[in-house]
Image (cartoon, rainbow, N blue to C red; front, side, top):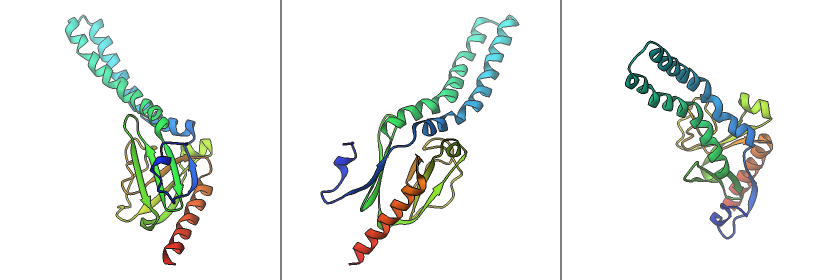
Length: 191
């Protein structure tokens, strides 16, 4: 039994439940490392060169906070993904999609099937490495523009009104289950 079970209504049935594939989910947090290393190496070189030229100690020390920022840029996204993984869970019921994630707090999204306009699968290069993919449910009000980003972190990854089930082992099977659950729900609502 998970934390999301307590959020289900009395007559709601779970169709599918899952978590992201750990390696694929965590690897997406490593994308910032090259940028952070460039930033970090520049300031380490700056500190070393100023110290070797005999600059005052206070001038050399000035670079330490900047090196700290470089470390945060380099390792921060990966550390956040580690924290997020523990709290990430996906549930598809016979009525809605529930996603939960968060590094420190929890972000829980509920999307009723009647709001879903389209369901699609996206497989990025990290997904190709691990045989995973993400399932997205487009809802009314989504702008349709979002550059590709990581699993809930980084540029373009804020999905807005587009819940995502990221780094799934069988994304096409999950998409098929979701599509069938949506169709069954719509038929039931018409009756």
